[in-house]
Amino acid sequence: MDFLIFRHGETFFSKTDTPYGDKVETAEILEEGKPVISRLANYINNISTDANFASPYFRCKQTVEIVSQITNKDFTFDEKIGEFRGDMGETMDQFFGRLSNFLEEVKNKNLKSVAICTHGYGISALRQLILKGSPDLDDINNYPRTGILVTISGKSLEYKDFN
Image (cartoon, rainbow, N blue to C red):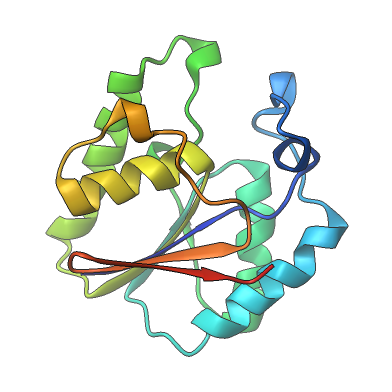
């Protein structure tokens, strides 16, 4: 299965590396980040996907709205690929568990290619789960900034920067 994974558009919080605080679910993307999303969308417009998923957080909804306008790809919002919620008592094991459940559900659909819009930790964990079969807590902070498409095909990993 091929995966096209990208982070939501640039937010004030992702730009300045500050915590979201009480805006974790409602933070908006910045106007200056929209052209980056458009470039990414134009690139994936020519890539066939069987299904497309996104975190239900507002910044991901805004991101896939732009992607959908360009690609006509519809996205299904799934809580399992939402942001890590340590602030709500979620443990990393629980976070990894819900991402593992998401991947199992996707794999059971026998899809050939999927697009996923999620968050930094989500990208890192998904990459590890897909390529290694298990997450590595020491590598969780190794995620791309916004505007980078992570493509995984089999055991091949590629990054494409649209910034």
